[in-house]
Length: 198
Image 1 (cartoon, rainbow, N blue to C red):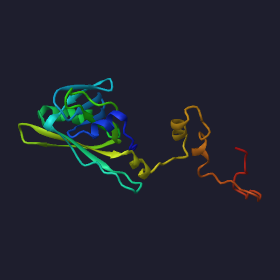
Image 2 (tube, rainbow, N blue to C red):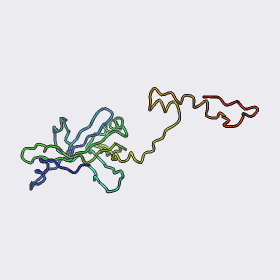
Image 3 (cartoon, rainbow, N blue to C red):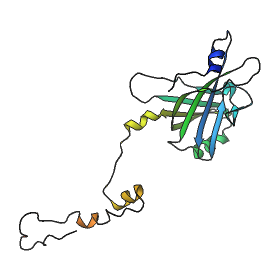
Image 4 (cartoon, rainbow, N blue to C red):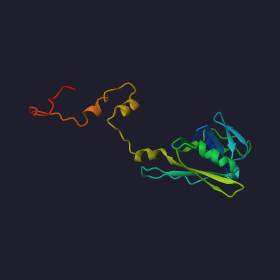
């Protein structure tokens, strides 16, 4: 992540009193969920962000010197129990999550220009805690570096080749030659088929 702050952010940080704000954007199946850690709706970056206030919690964002994936936990409490199943049905593993850190002018209440992106990753798991009255929904996310640990498997099949290259049918004969003996450099033995050009 870039550690360069814009002029307005640098000016705001130098003040005796600052008001940090966090913006969280999660891509659910039905659309983006955008929240911030204050109250009410807030417009920033051409989008409207819903205030989570004290009901929204975010785990510690870590950054290490090693090239390794880090995780982040995001939770929202005070959710009606009926909304839990909606959240589960709308959740899709692997969709993007982005978090920005910004500063708010304590006099005007406006967001200082150009908040800094402090986390970018993908949703991993969803869980909930329900006491019968209200529920807390938690989403864990992994940074994009988690892709380095994922095994990328390729198969020498027609279907896999078409999935990557829609019109390439070069592997369509693979099933027919999989167990076929092909003599190489010696005459074919009696009872075995002669070598053919494929």
